[in-house]
Image 1 (cartoon, rainbow, N blue to C red):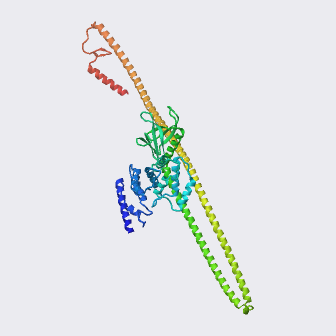
Image 2: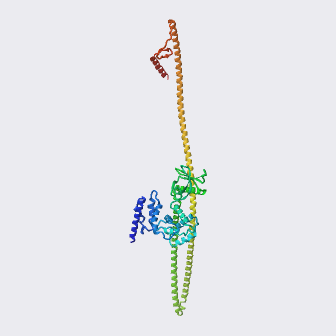
Length: 567
């Protein structure tokens, strides 16, 4: 019968898993479900449980904008009506749902799901702090003692009854309790690290508008109001972002700046305290993104879980040692009981022998007097042995009392060690923050040094390029100077040739003039001045029309040949 029920439960869970994977667009892996419950003879409702499988193989593989709150609300709708207490509570159904979701976050990873007293104390402290009330440690210690005597922790419905009963929120109204639960829900489930109203400067119109800002591990969203209905934009955070305080200007105070890769946002807080809180919260978020660390509340939950596991291992070791001491004590008790029985048997035998001796005292008084003395000596030795065993028993009991005292001292030492570890963790976080700041400054100095080296290298390259251009220009200048000298020589040679030709022309002109004078003198010819021809005349040193065009071309060719030969 039980086997058929477990088989039916397994099939139901397999169908449920397949439907969830289909709705959430996640590949279904039935082998993983079988492996999850393979070594568990008690079925899916045993220590393995279905929730760990749901978180690991389905919810963690969901891609895109999957709203886990709505998914939890669907699960709450399926199970709340059956399990929620019918007694009136001081919290609403919505607050009960939020407590149920927080329970799933803080509960242990085993079935049936429970929340241990340490996590109950953590949750109640968070709610009390959110209400602005003082934490009643003594009251919770009494409750914890009563809880530890009956069970290991509380179920989700018992936790809802505890918070809804108002046992740890006396004097607070329903609205205050509801706001406190909502604040803890936003921090633990929605990963809201900080939220509040601030002024934001627009990118286009440059006007200042009041917005409700919500800081999460990798994003800052801002809305028109705190009801989160009208979302105006997001500021995506990554390891490259930074936040800087700004001086007051343009009538705005408490300014700070958020620098991202693509945009810069100017924000004005209501006062200096809010400004410093927001700068510190955003800087802490950016540092966590750079380090790849989870949000603070998730990291704290993991550390609390590891500490509980460590303390549990130490407690199991102490219990094992106590069991060994108890087993040794029982062994000693058995040995003492065996000695006592031997003494009783010896006393019984002695009494029997005494009786016989009395019966035969008259007859055997002289004969057994020596044996009587010997019997007395034996009795004395046995009494000494009994006294010695009693002394050993007292010493053993003293040792047990000392061990119990050592056990108490060891518990106190463990408490001191846990406190010291918490202090050490605080110091380590401070040192880690200082190291991160130092590494950031060192990286910035290295960046400046690299830029300076690049600038020097560029300057050297430009200097080398100018030097090469200067050398090339000097070479070109030398070539031009040589050409200029060559042209100067050619000009001088041309002047010399010109002077020679000029002298020859003057000589020829003088000869021609003297010849014409002679002809005119002898022949008496006088050339009258007549109109010239309409055709273009060729004028040379010897007068108009001294050459024809063909003769002039021949002479030009001859001059060019002579010039080329001289060059």
